[in-house]
Length: 212
View 1 (tube, rainbow, N blue to C red):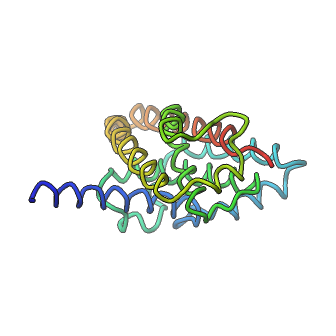
View 2: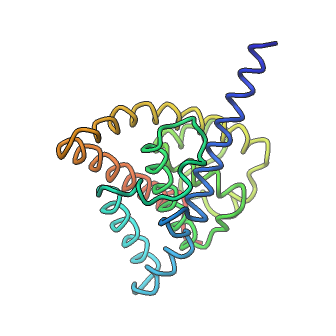
């Protein structure tokens, strides 16, 4: 019985963490604007939606590779304790990038299905395996209509697997983030890692959220 309660508590904490990441990415947090704001800003300066998407990825990649982002991210103290603060900010920025791309492609970023797909982009190629195991075809058929049809029970299972992957990845990223404590060299290593991570998530989003 005790073991079951512990497992339930862990599962609830992971779910809360996922919700925090998705909320931060979609609605913004502190100095991080909402995905809608970012999308409209880049779209107003671009000749097309695709140009705006590429602009968002390039800008966010450079931003993530810089330093000082965590200091300005308000609300970080209220996040779940499942992952280190430095990792949480990387996830929030990546989720914001992905949500912006989904919004620009015309998806309802507040729907439960799209929220799950946003989080899925954060785990890279492992996301394709999770979708395949859930019986969801990927590739050219992955579009708005298909995403809308994913039932709630399937979303719950997908979220559980995403949560496990993100927590595992947080452990890997945590080791890199500890290096940020070392002046100059550590900051460059950590910043470069974050930049690559956000860039990868953006490219995954371009493949997953196909234009209508």
